[in-house]
Amino acid sequence: GGAPPPASNGAGGAAAPTAGLQHLAALRSAGLNHIHLLPTYDFGSVPERAHDQKRIDEAALRREGPASEVQQAAVLAVADEDAFNWGYDPVHFSVPDGSYATDPDGPARIVEFRRLVMALHAAGFRVIADVVYNHVFAAGPHNKYSVLDKIVPGYYYRRFEDGDICQSTCCNNTATENYMCERLVIEDLVFWARHYRIDAFRFDIMGHMMVSTLKKMQAALAELTLARDGVDGKSIYIYGEAWDFGEVVGNQRGLNCGQMNIAGTGLGAFNDRLRDGALGGGPFDAYHLQGLVTGLGLAPNGISRSSPQVDMLELARHADLVRYSLAGNLRSYPLVNYDGVTRTGEQATFNGQTLAYGEFPHEHVAFIGCHDNLTIFDFITEKAPLTATAEERMRMCVMCLTLVVLSQGVVFIHAGDDLLRSKSLDRDSYNSGDWYNRLDWTGEDNNFGVGLPPASKNRAGWEYKAKLLTNPMLKPKAAQIRLASQIFQLMLRIRYSSPLFRLARTEDVLRQVTFPESGRKQPAGVVLMELTSAEQLPADGSGQHTGVMDPNFKRLLVVFNCSPLPASLPAPEGRPLVLHPQQAAFSADARVSSACKVEEGHLRVPGRTTAVFVEPRQ
Image 1: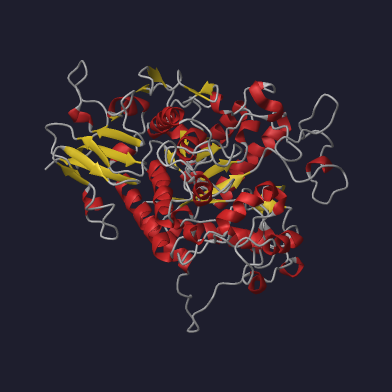
Image 2 (image 1 turned 180 degrees about the horizontal axis):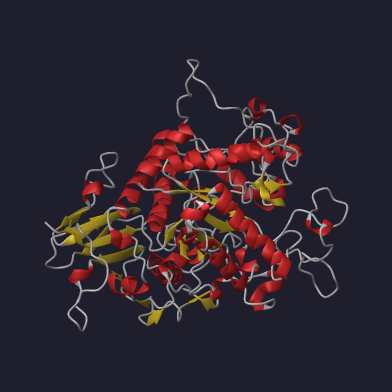
């Protein structure tokens, strides 16, 4: 909040681009093409006027230790009155929040938000707005932040049989299945698209809304045209959190937008299978559980009490979670599982549910890190063995990013994860101020070890978190931070070097994406993915080669070596494979370039490294 006016260079022109803008420009050049803004509508959890916002003494806090309690106490003391909050506290759906404007009174918030969107468009980005239609900040007739109850008391909220408002989302769940509440949110979505030129929408807790409502939203957006409205509504993408819980669980209030109901809707849903397969466990499970990337079976952290045999079996199972995700999280995708049985994504299971639940690739939102929960760096800090150096932890972070970037479907990257962003092990930083949410765009520091995370969400873990925060071996150097981003940008460029990483049709994924080294004899900690150009596959009954043709490569073989050990896989016979030309030319790190090679009939890849080999057309 309290944004200053645009800076001047003193000569009447605009100031030089900030480090943040320069970094975004570098990411755009590498292929990143969307910016997702956390809530920008009018929310109630931040004072809009700068003179009402309280501040901490950052200079004093910098003198405190990496695991001191002082920083979090200072942050919590002003948490509800400072300028920071994620903003998932809607008051007025259709109004930009005043805390981001130079003047919250008057039209500045509207004009400046439009300028923001225009500037991002001019920089080559499409703009995503985070919308929260599942709850509002306040209810009742008297609260100044209550709006809906002052229109029709009681109507807009979902209730239990005793009349109490459902609170499963956090507060005051809305009943978007009610006709006028549904109409309100549909018209609001169209309003943002038409008047602010929003290109896509991310739905908070989308699973608390009904499929029928989201279909009406899609239809309403599709009616927008460039000629009449200045926007092509058919190009607007909707995705969100398709978690199934609370009073709507199991379709108790109607067919909701939970993961199991997404197939065929065209709605995108975050895929927690990829996250949990890579990291190990879920964000609310025991912190020490390991996964494919964090050392399960191959680099144990010494906390787990399971046997090596069990760990290796679990490692193979986690690798299968990742394989299904790389293939777009499709119900119909067949894979030879770790036990030797071939199952489609619909037949395989994950925590007692169907593993893969999408019908189309664009229904798959591939992610490992997001603003919720720990950052990728912090997850790895808690899960990796203490013997793993900052260098190896950086490699694990990059492995996670690579698994996301080279997946079929829609790629989602948390801001700063490529810079090894840390929140000092804060598991829920929604109200933790700039102190814990700081992102250093210069890459000089990653914000690890700025004090124990706030007690309000992290007190139970302070003992083990303190040991990690005070270990100097775990904090990355600036060179490691910058290298992580360089490798991430390399993988973005590789994604956009071939259309085979971005297959739009389910039938093309089924034919053109395979995993040769799966099943019982899969190499531990290694996933091999093969992408084949359409004309290299058998023709159909009419003699046609259906699918997507890569103009540059006949095929690509991607080795995700998540193991700490070097990998050596048999190279396919009769295929003149070479390292992807962009990876071969990557001069910043020999481990990513020259150390990845085709040698003596084998694909050789260092530990915790991804290598993309290609069969060129020439």
